Length: 347
Image 1 (cartoon, rainbow, N blue to C red):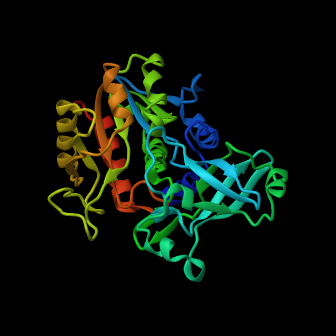
Image 2 (cartoon, rainbow, N blue to C red):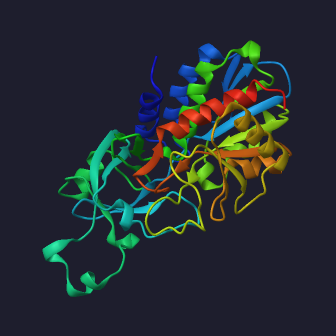
């Protein structure tokens, strides 16, 4: 039986940009199938497993996709220039990308490279004065000598690109790319192995959704699967326990337990369901944190638009939307405990 860390490492190291989540959902399909009454891939690519139990229909969701890039152009001498996969969002990428290993999903297979920009002794005076690395300053070096060689390797305009660092432990912390939101999927996987269906007070479904990073696309059709009474959305939480972040703005820390989110930039989450989760946590002796996330959105917003009562539970995470997203293993395990206690209690 795989450990929580091993499953999380496997999930985070898989490439799975928005619209290309098949590896992640295929892996989970094989792991969840023995535990499900029914499991299916929907027409848009969501993976939904019906676990069973008696009571209101409840769905636990997390999204499979990650941030990434697309090849925008290829220079004559074989360097790749990039664009973001996120529609309408183009933050300067250099602070997080330069020096990171890259993985290009080419037409003939995977090709490794390195995110790079001009550095050190060959920088011009004008380049030294720049405060940030803009999109046109960033490129990938795959070790090719020409555009023709790059094309021969199966890399063309439009090929997906992801950060490619290993997922590793830092003490009790776990650091890597795509923690947002593969850690939610790893929690669901661990939860599934701890449940006894006969004890469930809900008719439980698990859903791994697609294209959340492009605007909750997969979640938009989830209500077509079943008439859900409630949803527990699992996504990354923001943590303020690092230098340069004011505690007044984000009073959340790693190791303090999962976060019950009351509101984000899009919606207010169910006060009743959030309070119930808090009461269950208190009764079970599970520490939780409370937060408002002003610069944030999740699949929960789309579930609420479909008329599903929804709560958002978010393990705190440092360095979101980077290749070194960091979580505390204890928070993930406490989240499994909270979900199990909720599902076995009568709200």
